[in-house]
Length: 219
Image (cartoon, rainbow, N blue to C red; front, side, top):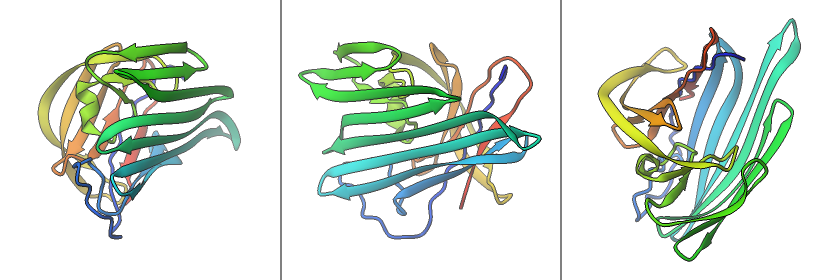
């Protein structure tokens, strides 16, 4: 695939979910759900489910996308990750990705002043210092001010962030969602949106070519 353009819009159902004392941006439902489309055709889903015990938070991430031509799967992407927080601080990450047949894993564990990383692609290393490291799972807006850990490759990089303002995103049901856009440059080249509650509301990035991939809110 020469070009990938992702637009994500996030939403939550109406089930009760306790507020977090540390103000992590978890929706009241405890879930963020996305419908994924390629050139307007549904190709998969992306879900983040949150559970907590006391001041501990667990985020389970599952994404599954398949592009088919004439009924034959020509591209498959599956990602599963578990992200753990304690007292509002990121603790651990365990991710497994199948990128069209290439299996990749990333694991992060806390050490003094930072994290120890084990990954299939980037190898094993430690990161300490500032800014603090956060995983590239998008749901936490604090990622924009962090050293970003790529949960597929295990590589890390800072982000250069600029916000051109607020705009409306479409939803899967044809509605609109008001969110603030953040354009990220540097090693990363993508745009993110966060809604008026500070929850993740959209994502978009490009690679040269003519394919469009979108993620729309499932409300």
